[in-house]
Structures are given as C-alpha cells and as structure tokens.
Length: 343
Image 1 (cartoon, rainbow, N blue to C red):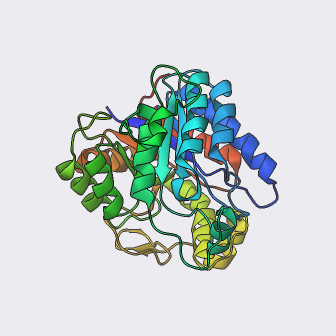
Image 2 (tube, rainbow, N blue to C red):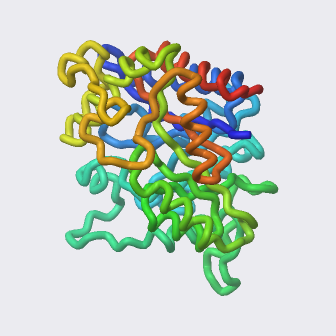
C-alpha cells in the first residue's frame, strides 16, 4: 500500500497576500489530516514573493496544534544557515509539544539567492564559508541523540526540553551526493523529484545499495516527492497546470512574482501541444517521469503507482501548486479518494 504525504511551499497566488498563503497552508494541513495523508512538511524559502514560508519551525508549531494525527515537519531546514544546537532546541521543543509526530527534514541548498544567503550569515567574511555540512549534520544528530565523546565540551550540554525520544531526522536532496550521504549516515532519505527529476532513479538506487544500518535506522527508508496536479478530468488538470509551468519558467529567469492565473499563463505560454503522446513540457529536460505528473484521479493513480513500484518506495510526498486554492484542496481530495486513504 502506498502512503501519500504532503510537502507545502506555501505558494502565494497573484492577487492574494502571503498571509492568505499561510492561512491556506493551515487549511490544507487540516484537510490532509482528515483525509489520511501520512506527513505534512513545510519547505523553507527566502526572499521569494511566490513562496511564503522562510521559517518552517514556526509554521510547524501552528500545524501541530491544528491537526490530530498527521506527522508534521520540515521539508526542510536549510542547515548551513544555522547553528546545529539551535535547530536541535527548536525541534526538541516541537517534539515535546507533539510527541512522536515531528520530522526534521534537513537540506543543504540555500533556499534563496546568494544575497539572502549572505544576509543569513552571522559572520560575513570576504572568503567563502567552508562547506562543513557533513560536520554540521553529525553535530545535530549528536545533540538530538547523544554521541559526543566524553572529552568533547558539548558532551556536557543537555538539550532542552529534555524528554524521551526525538524528532525523526531525514536527509533531503535532489542529487547523488545527498543519496550517498544519507546512506553513509544510516538516515531516512527524501528525494525532491519536483526539483530535479533526471537523477531520481539513480539516487534512490544508490541510497538503497549503499545504505549502512545505524542507531537511527536499520533498513533504508526513502520518500520520493513529485509535483502533482489532479482534477476531475485530464483536460482540466492540464489547464490548471499552466500556472505552475509559467511560474517555473519565471523562476528559472529570476522572476520571483506570485503564482499567475491560468488565463495569464495561457496567454504567455499558449495551449500545451501534444508531443510523443504526452503534453509538451515547456522546455523541461527529458526524464523518466516529468517534474509534475498531471491528470485525472484514474490517470494519476496509475502513473504514481507505477512510479512507486518501479522505484521500490512505499511513500510519495506530493507538492501541488495551482493558482486557485480551492483547486489545490480538490486535487488532494481526489488523490486521497483514488488511493483509498483513510484517517
């Protein structure tokens, strides 16, 4: 049986505000909880008009209170910006509030432009900051689970709130490097197919074949996160997808404006044309599966099930961006029904 989960970038639609986007995230989390989705993760982005959540830990605290059983977490916290101890304290706090429901997804990407990356630094040096992400990640795991050698000064730190258990740490990625790192550390792994669809199969296979059992995980555990738009018909889903197609084109050009309407997108892009039996991808590179899978419930149930079976994963994490929030809610409702989810 396939588990379905949600990753939410809190998209801001043209004509609305970031506050509207955050309220939409709360509404969607409540719906996902009631429909039987397994996890609800919040992404981290900085300096983007189109996406409204630069601080997932704050939104996770609200979502935990608004839901009853769904796991809540980050997809993810961009660790290079932060102190591992501070991240450990934040997520231990969340774990204390919502025991056994919190995931700490860790990412390496900046989540914004070089300017935001510079502004987020505590020390702004003329020389590039060292890439010490692996050391940061190990330090974070030690703060959460213990493991510092006795002679290490940090071994004397008891991270508050101190209580049994800990949030589950996931390594997020969209490359073979992240797959290898998750396998070497024995961590669960979430691959962002909606960001980089070309290496999906290679990354999942490398993770599984290289996995080393650890104190955190004995068997490999992987999630693949595709973009998905579901509507009552294939044609309606393709029409709704025009907004995210144009958004993607704009983001690649550095245009960070909110999610355009379908009408604006179709004026700029034109109607999608058939290409090799599938809709044209508006310049997307060829991959085994497109960045976004689009269609009716029957179409997507078949394609997503095939994707999960082919990759050998039992959980897909769905990201959906459309202009109309009602259509986004409807997309997740249709998927839940097609896959027989129950709360």
